[in-house]
Length: 253
Image (cartoon, rainbow, N blue to C red; front, side, top):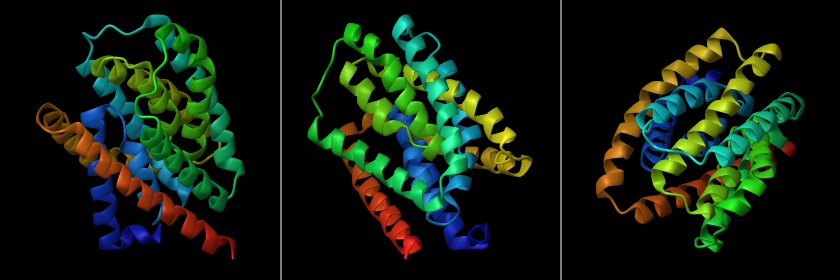
């Protein structure tokens, strides 16, 4: 936690949170996949994951309310969210049991997997009927990554992108998944003694740059070339993943 007394570290973390919020406002996801690797560069990876749980719950409830008029794909969305909640419970055990080095590697692998899939298979698609059948395993995998590393986008967004749903439907579906996963994570992490009043309060503070970024992202989504913005974020994620591998390598020495 000593890094949090360093003003440069705080500025970088807040910039990452703002960037993550901007990505979430524009695309419906992205705050953990940007913020967790950056925060894990300055604090214990467990703290980085736990601090983002409360913001995940609140920001996604806010996005569901924003898009409350959007009709979701009932059976598909519910299967996806419930499986994600189950997976988040399993992943929370991994967060407690695994070492910080292993968790850093998991975060880095998750981020690189996401970037690789986005680059190599940008136009891959599956039917909604097929996606409904696959919702349980992909939802569970998303939850495991979310619970263990705070990063589920490699699974969840790659899967939803392949279904080719409309942007508002994707946002509501992914937000429902995050709410379900966070609702499981909070009591489990509290039971394990990792989620405390202090970390919950830190999570509330994190909401300030996140909501500011989400407002900017929602505005940019209407005017900016999303592909250009998305590619820039992917480049940043590659650098962040490389740093996680670097840090894990030194920790293992």
